[in-house]
Image (cartoon, rainbow, N blue to C red; front, side):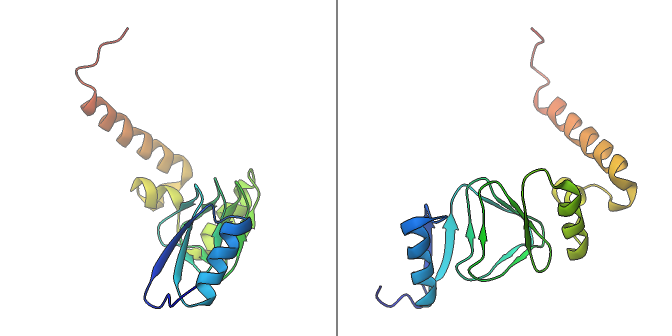
Length: 142
């Protein structure tokens, strides 16, 4: 595939099949590869070379994904090293976040980490309710 040194490749459709094979080949030839497949990679996460994040998958805060790891459709990767969890495994995902030292609500919504989950949710809701009110002052109820 030529000389990909110092190149960054964005491979769309890279979760499976030809796209995944292309991404792996580019990475093995030395390119830095990002696989775009409708996935979310959150703050502090690290993707190893040729990692594949499928559609609707999430690589959570601070997760360290090993090279050539595949995160399946809709699954969540959390922890250091990252482990993949199917949808609905909230407690396991929280445990993975805890081992990385990251906490979702404080990082994403900028609320105090000391307030406990209920306090964090309340603070986030108050903050965003106030923001919505500022942006929609002229709206009329119908």
